[in-house]
Length: 277
Ligand code: IPD
Ligand code: CA
Ligand code: CA
Ligand code: CA
Image 1: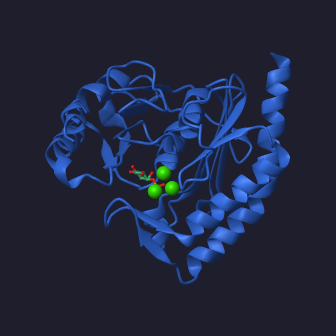
Image 2: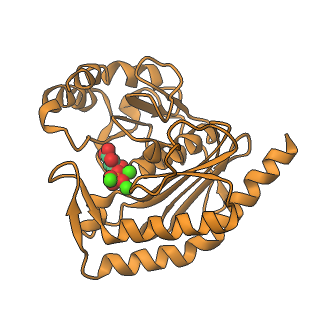
């Protein structure tokens, strides 16, 4: 409805208005001395910048949209957040690409997904060090720095670049992960691992990458980027070609649509990686 479109636009405009300050603050923090902690294992990092970014985003949303729900990676969500689906909910990754951030690389992003009654309706992914800010609203298309974007028309896979990522608990899944990667090396025009899922989606959306696949992503990694790909004319599914559900699916495939089946086939060894616990 036009009313819903207006509510989404208002929310995206509002949050975008606070981003320039947050972005320069994080760029500055990255250049200073970082306090780095690990979470699940030595590969899984969190810095005080992740926590500070989340705090600012959450405080801003609570102030401006007090009845909206929040799901955020570093733990600020309401207790019932995983199960509720009423009204608006924000799904936040305060810094996507923490390992890059902690190692001085520019490929990191703030990812913001907006859901209404459980449906993805709005998205912003901002990569300040790359000067890229993506935005999409359901049914309204996607933009980068205000300009409309669309996926590329490259097909088959050999004509373009595929990007992927690996989970933090990858050591025990190395074999099937390598099998999928081997298939990509044999079929794709190029293979990259940039280290920030939200950005990987956006670089499919704007036509730079032909496809992206990864297993074990969390809602905050995908809530923004998947909508941006779809609104740019791309396709996002799970490994079986079914709808990708941000709270449930085990792996994601996002492409320009043309190479989708070919990428799903090459990524099939991930099914074995998922089965390992
Ligand atoms: C990670 C990044 C990375 C992906 C991991 C994610 P984080 O998010 O998106 O590219 O491979 O699966 O967990 O921890 O940096 O927010
Ligand atoms: Ca993390
Ligand atoms: Ca992330
Ligand atoms: Ca993160």
